[in-house]
Image 1 (cartoon, one colour):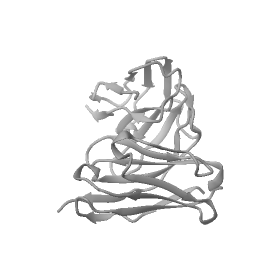
Image 2: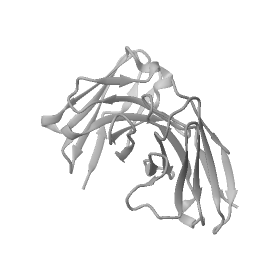
Image 3: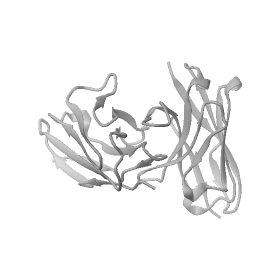
Image 4: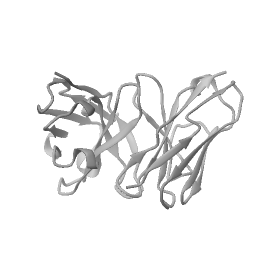
Length: 106
Length: 120
């Protein structure tokens, strides 16, 4: 099974900040890596698929990079609506999610 | 508009059974893999099971193998999760999700979730 880890588990940031979240897979998953945003009481929403492809309708301030075992989600300029929890998820071998990164308001 | 609506959640005693359903609309169900994903209250996401377009390939997380069965009825635009031998650790909000593909796929649409509580 592919295990996913994320860092940090939480972070505090201000509107306008550049935010970076890291995801690591326990084995090579090529670019079979997706990122989701979840707000309280709402189902997750896909932001990035295949490591770096922006889902339709998602603002361009979100970007993803990486391949193999190390991946990054970057928010170039944090907006008020971006305070949420972010999860990575691999689809190389069945599916599994990372534990999440909660982005708080500083 | 793509819509996924889960139903069937509730309170069940340990060792009991329950069947969750997912009603799909706004797209052709037979074209897509479909999955169940669960979330423990206040915790993270866990993939549970996936079924292919035809219903003849099914995949499960190890913790539910032999206890849960995923199925689908494309003619009725629905998917189900039969859950047997339920445990306290199965308590979670269960989401139905459309899976864009099996290899390199992602969950592009989600339902609102249905809550399962396993407790005596």
